[in-house]
Amino acid sequence: MKLGRMNHVGYAVPSMADAVAHWRDVMGATSVSDEIILEEQGLKVVFVDTPTDSGMNGTQIELIEELTPGQTALTGFLAKNPLGGQHHVCFEVPDIDAARAEFERLGKRILGPTRIVAHGTPIFFVHPKDMQGMLTEIMESPKAAH
Image 1 (cartoon, rainbow, N blue to C red):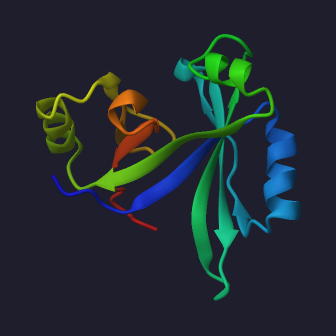
Image 2 (image 1 turned 135 degrees about the vertical axis):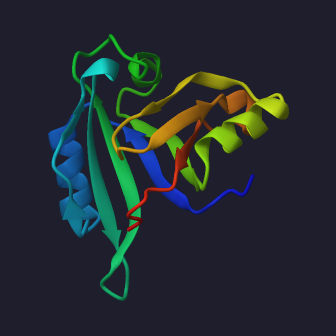
């Protein structure tokens, strides 16, 4: 398995409006996506791009808010971190099935099935206890990479 580039850092937020305003007005986000509703997960997602000195987009930040507070995979995280905070990091791989098989071969705990979510590409999560304390999303590289 070959690990690719870091695609984004995910932040759980208690208020999407406040988070978008912060990233745009304080951190200088160069673009903010439309909201993506993930009904099955009970989440709302927005992607923001941070600026670089060259004026091009820098790091992508995923903002994640519960549609119905207290009923999602973020509930426990937000209970411990009421202001929100860094939730996960996401790395790209060329082949999601090969990556999943390799993580499993190494004895890493995969959290749930491989599924399609906000980027429209297959992903899975690896347990933080198997990834030096960081919840890690593994995502197949988008076909139309940005």
